[in-house]
Length: 79
Image (cartoon, rainbow, N blue to C red; front, side, top):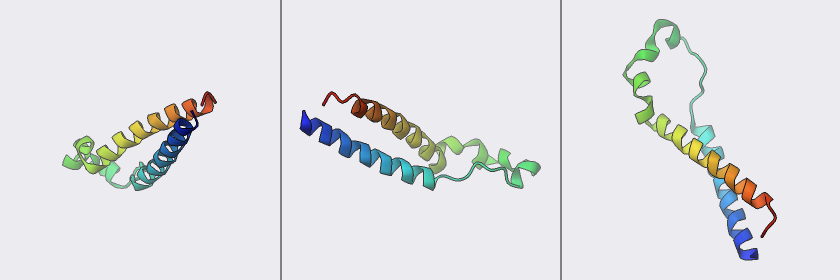
């Protein structure tokens, strides 16, 4: 069972690094001057889910769930 523990630990480290990189790649959610004038209701604001930023958000959610699952499994000390 030692090999499984090593594989899960390596996978956990890869997920940690990928999650850190994805979070750093995302834009801030701060309200800029465009929100006052209604610039957030442009084409790019409405279709943000289909853009690269939307993809980054979805990948971050998936990796965060994977991070939590791997952390719980590694914490069981069954291996």
